[in-house]
Length: 249
Image (cartoon, rainbow, N blue to C red; front, side, top):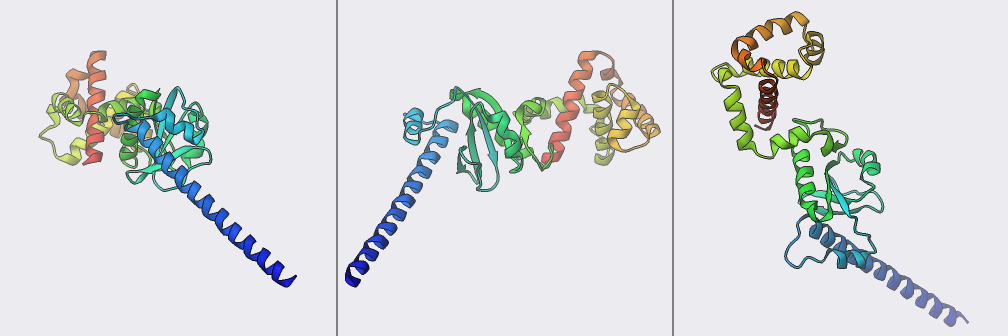
């Protein structure tokens, strides 16, 4: 009886070890499939079989996708995510808006919502947001592309943004950098707040009289661009581009 019990214990131990090994092997296989699927969606190559990989994982391919990226190796449950390029990359379907808050704790950056075939564009936008985090954007919490479309537009072509800055802010070119930065920030706030001195003062944490003093210098240098609505719009884009280029230097 003792020999039988010992034999049964040995069989149970071997069976448990085999089951654990099978589970580990299956987990590794699924992780490899997830990495391949995420790669196929955000950077498709010739012969990419998204549907085949999705079927093997039992994942429904969404018609539209939002790609999110964040630092670290954690991912919420039931999210199609895999590490890529030192970041976690997730492909979100219609649940993107719901998951944004949960991903905010991971400091995720969410790209634009695109048809699944255009997911690489969403991935590119998410990477741009992540790159600008802590400079042009806050360092904590979620960043959603739809909330920062003008900044993404400016960041999409740095040479074009630089050309816009040179064309619109040429009168400030010979100023000391510190003085130039002050006038750029003040003019940007003034245009953003529709010329409200109180709002600009609150935004920049300065006295309203200081705003008035700075605006005199801005009108002397850029006055011709503060008249027509189209010129003001162009100038505001240039000022915002200058701020972003400054932060990325």
